[in-house]
Image 1 (cartoon, rainbow, N blue to C red):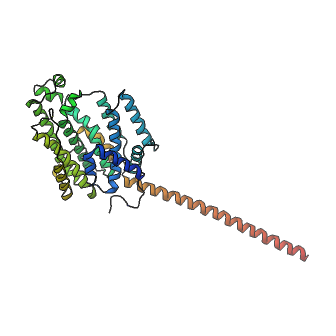
Image 2: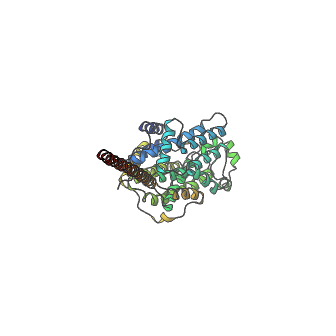
Image 3: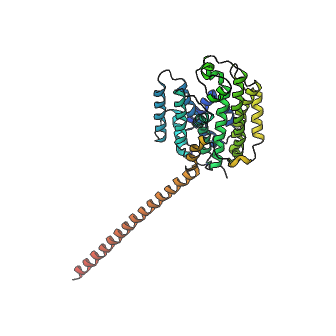
Length: 371
């Protein structure tokens, strides 16, 4: 049975979906490449989702003035999308359509905006627990959104989707240590840095690679790798047509971390880039085979991700929403049919009364004339 009926109308105007694809082709190349391995019925709403996340991220990063104003504007846009009256912009219209069609819990994009707010406030994270909390908002929430689009409601599979999002964010943090530091940001756990003999403020003032910095990067990449492995058991339980695309994203992002390792964990003086030939090979691997279910399938979610898992698990799936809509339509049709039946009944009764009156009038006339 197909994941989505091919006869159902598209969730959004095709021109709006095309605009989302164009946006992602310019700014989210890893997702854009992996998305071609998703079935069309999944690829289109996923593009709308990622495009909204992209423009939200850009709105904060490119804000010249008060970022709180940019955040307020984004929350207003989110309000409008969930009220089914989006701004007349292609990305907003497409995202609103996906929200309505696939029953996207509002907690997920709200979490994303909260993560952007933490960035705007310049938060740093003392412990790995804090890094997990941040990653839950800016990345695991996106993994949960993707799972929601696929109709996934199993808490175990949702936990693995969040593992994948967290692993990707940890990989990004490890790749961008130098770039972030030069922008005044530090996402590595501060207590790990101090344990390695690095004073965070001194590092921010003069970001220089050292074996001590490399040891912290290694610790975080090791966690990311374990989470990627956990995620595979969840990928194996996704709808069959969706597995290659999500597996491709897992392989592409993990390879960024592998490049950091090849660079001696130095992501301060250089930035890891996966060569194009290697990306092609990984995409081919994703198409040729997908993971088998593993023993980590039923591992509990990271505590930081639990609220995401719970929000999706409690929400109706797209199939359930469609079934409800059809049932409501049948009920309305049934009510309409009953109303028509009653009107027909009254009309028939009135017609019989008219005929009876006509007969009575005729009989009276005959009697009168005969008399």
